[in-house]
Length: 376
Ligand SMILES: *Cc1c(COP(=O)(O)O)cnc(C)c1O
Image (cartoon, rainbow, N blue to C red; front, side, top):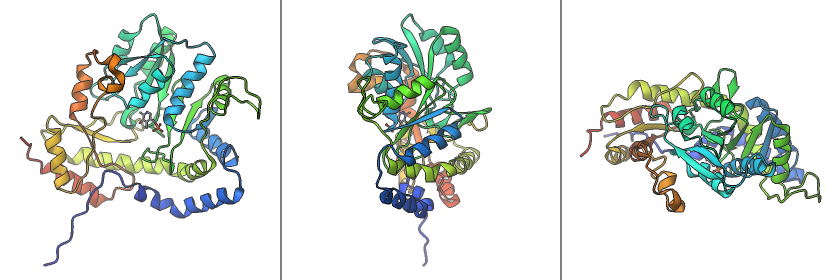
């Protein structure tokens, strides 16, 4: 008897993600090796121009990772006196902990607010209600690759005199009308962690902004507070996107839109074909406004569903099992009651999602979901 093993579907296979570009990546790596210049050079400057051009901002500043990108934005505003220690920053309660860490690392105070249940993103009504005398900024996270409601949030920020900062670490290439993620607030942070929609082959990040002064400040802060060699005007750090990662990203940036289109096709297939009383599908939102960094379903029977999928060769993951305010690191926030956030964290399950998923793998995920009996 000949049996064909059904395709296994790993949650994310980074080798496969980079395989289509392997020859180009190797050529770019050779170029960097042979150049003899590895930090703050031509590859970085070219990538910064190309990424700013892609996002539609005046500036892109390459930094060490996404957390540093967020943190340096806040740090630059603190240095300039736009923010002061103890100021409050409104953040979504249901985000990856990095959004909070950037705030607390700068001695600012995160004020978590409940999301809009349909979009998983900041709910403008809750944001407005959370604004107090010390509120200075809104940090909008485009969670799972879907843009937050930036029209409403911009309007609130303008009316209340607040900064609007994007955590765009999951949303490279998402757009709303003519504007892309990274160009929808005063400043934005991107991560190029390997698993993001635009991923390096190591750590990387960037800040995008149209603010010339902020850009100059962040360029100095990422490099020892140094606007020119051996002149140190302020207490900076070291967080630079290196030449090798910049070169890798220059290979991959031109393919980002096609990759996002494929993610959309996979999401469309999941959304059209998975029909199950115990699996609630995510909403797509406006065209272009979702780049499906993650495809997150909800189920009251998550653990049983996850085990069922695993038994059928489909690897699902949870983003994220515990919200920041319930982490040991944030004992100070433990008393907060955020019931919707807590329920979401108990129910969310991310199905495999990548631009490299083949149709037979998509098929397998759909079938595995459909054969779920409902569990105990
Ligand atoms: C990945 C991520 C970050 C942090 O990026 P790193 O490059 O891992 O430091 C921040 N915010 C969100 C929402 C992320 O998904």
